[in-house]
Length: 135
Image 1 (spheres, rainbow, N blue to C red):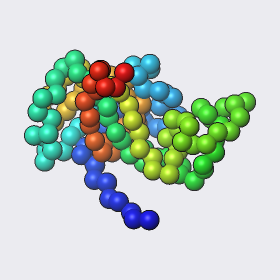
Image 2: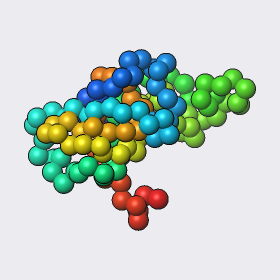
Image 3: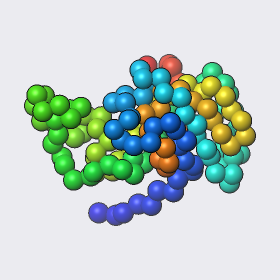
Image 4: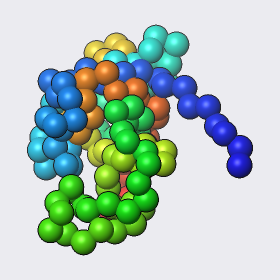
């Protein structure tokens, strides 16, 4: 297999400092955070506005990537399932996907609500939510 290189476009600035503080799903928890985008990618933010919804793809750098079967939500009372049938951050490629609301765009900083990533998490991509395609 070929290895691929992923280059972060920015970092998360969040009140969540470690995995234990992170909600199982960001959107219902309503955590407010910032996406600090590197200056060299600033032009790529053109068109993003307050009120938009974005998919944020992050690299869950604190993930443990060695199990292919887990108890969903870490609950031992739930039978183990294959990792690809869960939303666990602990996956072979720990890519996080979160749908967020854009609260403000201030230069290289996007203020968002609904992110479940901890402070310092690398952001690898942003994609617009398009209701007619994504719902």
